[in-house]
Amino acid sequence: MSAGPILIEKVRSMGAADMQERGKIGADDGVTPRIGFVGILFVVFAASLLTFMTARECHFNVLMRGFHVPFTPSLVYGLNTWLWWAVAAISLWMCASRLPQIFRPSRKALLIHAATACALGLTHLAILQMTLEWAYVQWPPWGNVYRTFGVVSPERFGGEILLYGFIYGVSCLLYSRLENQQTLIQKLEVERQLTQAQLKALQMQMEPHFLFNTLNALSSLVRLGRNKEASRTLEHLDTILRTTLDRRAPEKVPFAEELRVVESYLAIQQVRFAHRLQVKIEATPEALEGLVPCFILQPIVENAVKHGIAPLEAGGLIETHVKRVGNTLWLQVRDSGQGVAAPATKGYGIGIQNTRERLEYFYPNRHEFRAIAPASGGYEVTIQIPYERCNVDA
Image 1 (cartoon, helix red, strand yellow):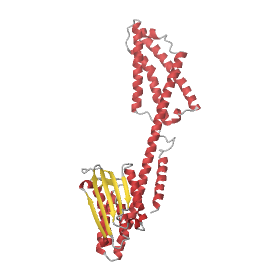
Image 2 (cartoon, one colour):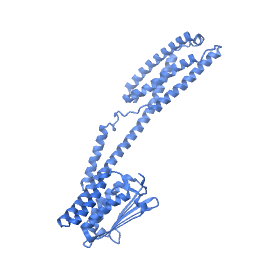
Image 3 (spheres, one colour):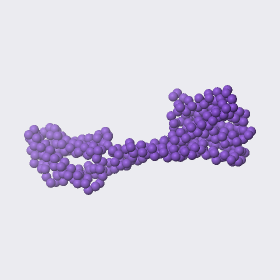
Image 4 (cartoon, rainbow, N blue to C red):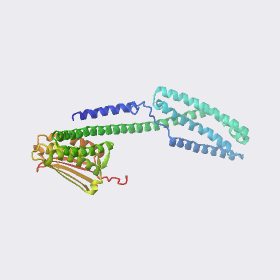
């Protein structure tokens, strides 16, 4: 199974290429921070608050001069003062969704913004002057107070430029923070998808390995003319294949389901080895209801058969113990093989490495894995993972 790492690297490269094609990697990927409903609501709220404050001040000034006029002209003036910049701020963000470079410092961008600020400022002042003229016709007392207010002046124009600069500066700051957050989210998403692809590659690596060994055992039975045993083996193989096809890797399954696969596999091997293979399985009721990564024990049990029992002429025993200990699910597989003295001990590697990587995916820094050859003989693998009870009603 040396092709496993190659397969994983191919999945990594394919995953990254797919991300690039979808535009999820890169600076100019079109996934630009957009102003959402909350952002628009905030801009409208700020403009409304400033509108009310400006209108209230204007109306108060008119009243202080002894004129009694409705609040309407002051409100219209306040709306024209601040609604203009609210629309400008929202439009600036909408443009940034298509042209993100407008929020990235450059000489060209600064010149464009300077020209935009001048154009918006002059247009806004003209609209305010027209508002005052219109208010003078509709409400002469109010117009007499503000008609000579001097809206179009160098001072007011400078204020308009500063106001645009303030909007631009705040927008740049918010845009930069949102872009950094979005970049981080995209990076984490790519890493998650690549990790998931790697896990799928590990499972694709393991399942054919298991199937080929089973088919070899079945072929041996047919050659030896042990047809009844071959028929029972096919039934167990059917159970395993149905379970495998029903699963959507990678996923967690109830241990009771995982145990059916292990029992079917061991039943196949018992037909193959006859009296040379003894099996002992102990699992508490709570353990059967616990969730485990699919195919978590099967490769370990397969290693125990292949490297622990198969080399011994007299055969041996494979013990599987699973129980809940507090908030931990404790799983152990032990064989009575030759342990460290076995020439094929290194063959345990693929099952152990596969299991280690899958445990790290499902339980990062929250699991224990131990594989040892006890002094008493044989080989022992112990796994401890967080206990998660399956939803029996699902």
